[in-house]
Length: 311
Image (cartoon, rainbow, N blue to C red; front, side):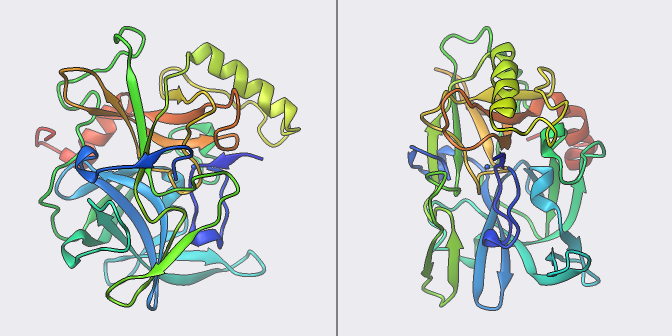
């Protein structure tokens, strides 16, 4: 079945989208601006998606990660889910962004931000991240004073994976560590019940995959899984998407919206992609599909930076 790389409402609403499978514990200092999009209900907190702070006020995530999130009359975001009939939306609880943490059980107040605005890419089709344009920008209440992600095409850097010498691309997130893995949970020092596919930030190397090969693999897998009707016409756009991962290490449910990072010797790490979707997790010849940040540089700049230069 398809796997968008997100896990909305801790399993209350499963989306075909993407902890990092076969990764290892990550140092958050290696992932500037790394964030966890969370829904809160009473004393319980649920990780939903990844994101990255790209300025003191704005975070970048996947479009499908914010479906069902609304800005309420108090100016803050809340998560809504369909009721049993699927016809009405019911309020689940507030949505927050937790920034810069390697362990979701240890969250100081200084790392927690309410969300006051959500801008989804205008060409994103709700419920269909596989059709592309799967991006959204989140404006937090207050300001993040820590490091932010450097974005491809927005920081004086334009990555060319085809020409880079031995490109090393990495993904990070709090998603599943195996396609069939169960969520982790615990009680924080503050007495909150915390649930996430992985409570510890994971990272893994996912080599870039040639776009022509990726398109063929996706086409073959759609046919193999008997999904030709559901995913009719779905392919990979070489202009707006990147394929990465050869089957051993991969993003998975709960990683959606998180960063794909390019690290080259002597250069500053740069975020080149956003986790979007894939057909399963870490399956052979089934690369993950990421939104290409540089293709959306103008849109991101106009929304998040305005007249200011990217940080």
